[in-house]
Image 1: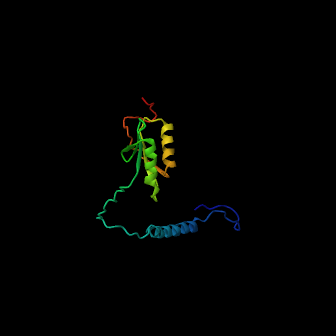
Image 2 (image 1 turned 90 degrees about the vertical axis):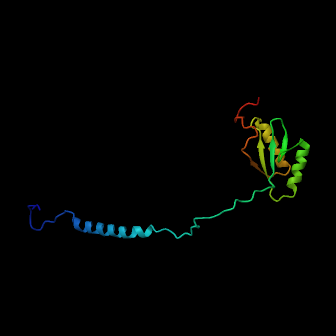
Length: 147
């Protein structure tokens, strides 16, 4: 300890660290006790380890319309002329509550033909078109010009 020279009544302006250390140690102990209590989480119900799920039944009444590169129009692998295709599509979708039709087209078709075909399907009963990504022609590449 260093002694400072001066008069007897002078005030010292040094910081007393002892109370600061006491407060910090008390806070450290509080946080050490509280932290494990906060990390408990929520109770959950976990299913048993061995579950035998049956696969969902396949929907056999799905409608898949396709447009081939030569302009052929198909409903579920049956080819139709344009007029018969539109009549058959209207007939199939008429009594359905769910008017979802899945759509596939050849990869070599230009965009305008595909868009026109999708509009025709929409105008004749197919209110929601789901796009099938399995290409009729797997050798075609996106953006490739038709041969």
